[in-house]
Amino acid sequence: MTDEVALLRRARQFDEQALAEIYDTLSPAIYAYAMRLLGDVELAEDCVAETFSRFLTAVSFGGGPRDYLKAYLYRVAHNWITDGYRHARPESPLELNLELTADENAEPHTSVVDEMERQELRAALALLTPEQRQVVTLKYLENLDNAEIAEALQKPVGAIKSLQHRALATLRRILEGNEMPVEEPPITKPTAKRESTT
Image (cartoon, rainbow, N blue to C red; front, side):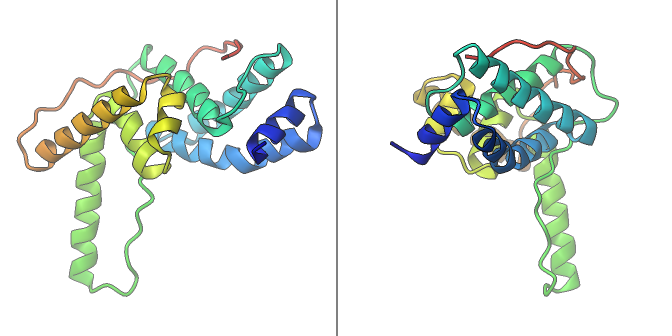
């Protein structure tokens, strides 16, 4: 039995230590994921709160994950964020926090070039479709493997590979100046809605 499965078994018994361990271990990653996609502290905090609330609700009714806990929580966060795309457009364009920091020892001109490349990459990622951006974020920023991403997004591994391939090809075209921007769906804070995700 893996540590994650054992932890989930304890969580299903509402072991407070297990629930605290799950929150302490995974909430920073869920928050960082939400911040990268939403670019808003309050929305990211709401996403974390709702993600763990839905997890607890699911567990209390005998649902929730049997394995792939991290992927399950990313899926709940993904669903909450996706709900927000269906409402109102944000006041400013989506900005992805890539957490790329400049090398302090680099020459000044190198730092300027690096920053320009980071800004260009942020802008390019914001032009992907929501699904493509989700896959790229989970794969390259959250370091999930394809099986975990498939679990998180409830898609076959083959579909994840296809989305990843199309996303990288689109990014390449955007960065080379050969791709028109896609129409960005709106993002807003979803209405308060407590429902389990199984």
